[in-house]
Each structure stands twice: as structure tokens, then as C-alpha cells.
Length: 461
Image (cartoon, rainbow, N blue to C red; front, side, top):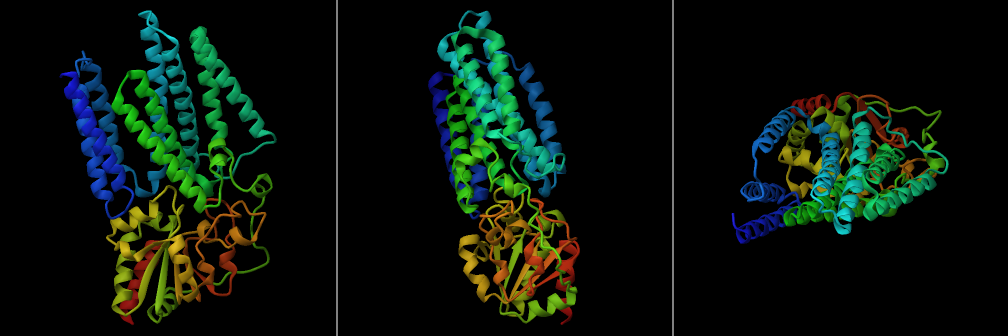
């Protein structure tokens, strides 16, 4: 394939990626955006394989067959509730690939006597960004999967330790560029691997959606660095798009959570060490429980109902039953809206994806800033497993790990029914003060079964 043809094909693929990214900015256009991105990736892969630089297809075919087979199995078996940790582990693969590409390029160019300072700098940057992305994503996966505790793991002077490791890493990178060879490369990469661990361990469970978004950005920059190493313009463009969009999304989410973007980048963000040690519980008070029939009666006689979906809905796969509940309520003249917190679930857009899967109209789904004023005039708020993002302690308890995080103002509704399996706290490990309010009653049970029971009760009324 001629160089000019390859360049035009890469340009077309880049345009498709940009259109895909633009489409993903809205739930209404997300499907089209995915199709654009898939078309761009297909085109990019085909023209790359047709490039004269590809001399042997044996390892490529083997890699595609093995990787594609694993991907096909995962796509069919991984539940929607496990998607956040799948995304995290996929980010780790990108980081590891960047490290391996840098290492392989170093050996091939060293043996050919073609190493220069610019190439060495590219290899160093690609390797340490990739290494931080790799171990940071593995730790994020462990936290999301429950293999590592969701509580922040902090120690005295952690930021000074991270700073010292970062300076040492940069120092070895400089030594590598100046001809330090493989020992300097190994030391730099090892420090980056350790730094990735220490940056993510101090981050608590409530903040993990932001971490997943930031690691997505890191993986993009690692891919861009790999593009410079391989002299592949499309990989540079794609990596830059992913890196920049991930960083912007992280910034938006941090603003929504009243957090600092710099704290995300440097690890251990939140409300401080004293907050991490606090339990945030409400002692000496009891909760009220309600039967499904009581909740159905209140819902049926309400003028306005706001449904707040959370991770409990995702675990129970209750989105389709919830769509049926909305239909049943609207047939009885009840106005129904959905309230979505920016970090509900375990990754950005988790709840939006679930509701779209159940064909719930987009005009019924509202973000936090839009819907919060409505809670004061809401007759019934139905919370389906959204724990931390509805906790009033975020506004009132300075000792709470989630203090300062904007929440959905569910506590202002006239009546709250909170569907929950047990009194176990949310992912942040904090007791929810909402449970103890006089206007809140808990309906214990699996979200899908409870919603189906509500539909049945409404049908008999």
C-alpha cells in the first residue's frame, strides 16, 4: 500500500474516531458514536495490516485469534455489574503493552545501532506512563472486584514518599536517555510500577468512578507515547483523544464531587486522613421498614415520583422491571422522573447505560443539578440501591469520608422508600444517615424482586 493511501486511510479513521467521541457525549447519540468508532478501528486495523512494514502475519494472526477469543468470551459472560472492573483491567493491558513496546523497541534499535536521545526519551516516557497505568489499573480492579478493601489505605507522609519516588523515576529516566542502558530502564520502570500502586491505594470506594476515568486518560497517553515510538500517527491521534477526553471527564466529575483534579492525579484524594478513619455512622437510632404494599399505595397516590437508581439496581438487573414500574405508574397519572448522580454505580455513565438498555426515555432522566430542586416538591422518592450518593452526611458530617461530595437531595422528599438488601453500608463503607430520617422507610429485598412486587401490587389496586 502506498504511503499516501495509508495516510488518507488513517485520516479517515481519525475523523471517524472524532465523530465517535462526539456521539458518546450524549445518550441519544451514543449508539451512533459507537458505530463510528468501530468503523474507524476496523479501517485502521485493515490498512495497518496492509502496510508494507508488516512482513510476517504469523504472530499477528495468533495474537488476534487468542485475544479475540478471550474478548468474545468475556463479552458474553461478564455481567453489567462487573463492567467497571473489566474496564479497569483493560486499561492495565494498555499500560502493559506500552511498557513491552518500549522494551522491545529498545532491544531492536540497540542491536541495529539506531538509538538516539529522542528515541530514548520516547521510550522512557512511554514506559513510565504505561507502568503507572498498569499497576494503578490492577489496584483499581482489585478494589472494584472486592479483592482489596474499598477503604482508603493511607500512611503518614505518603505524599512525600510518592514525590520521592517520582523524582527518582524521572532521574533514572534522564539517566536512561543519556545512555544508562537497560539497568536505568529497569529501575525507572520498577519505580513507576510501585508509584502506580501507591497512587491508587489511598483512594476510597466512593471515589473509584473518578479513578476509572483518570486511568482511562492515563491509558490514552500511554497509547500516544507508543505511537511516537512506533512512528504511527493514528495511534498518536487516538491516544491523545482518549487521554484528553478522559482528563476532561475526570475534571467534570471532580467538580460534581467537589474534589480537586490535582488530588486525583497525585493520589489519595478526598477529605483528609482524619475523614478516612471516621465511620460516619448514626448511633442509637433505629430505622423504619415498610412492606411492599405500603410503598405501592404511596406511589399510586403520588403526584410526582422520583426514582434514584444505584448499584443495587445494577446488581439485581432491575432496569427492565423498573421500566415496567414507570409504565404502571404513568397509566395511573403519576409523573415519574429519574435522578442520576455523576458517580452512581462504579464507573461514569453506569446508570445511564442501564436505563438506556431498558428503553427508558431520555427525557425522563435528569442529572443531579437539574433534578435536585424537584425533590422538595416530590411526593415519593424511590431509591433503588443508591447508597453513598444519597447520604446527607456528605453535607453535615465533617468527619465523614464523603464530606463535601454533592449528593442527590433525596432527604428533602415528602416520603422516601429505600430498597436495600440489608443494612450493610455502601461502597464507601459509610452508614447512610438518610435511613434514620422520619420520612424514610426501608423496603428490604432484592431490587428486581421488590420492583416486580410493586408492579403486581399496583395491578391489583
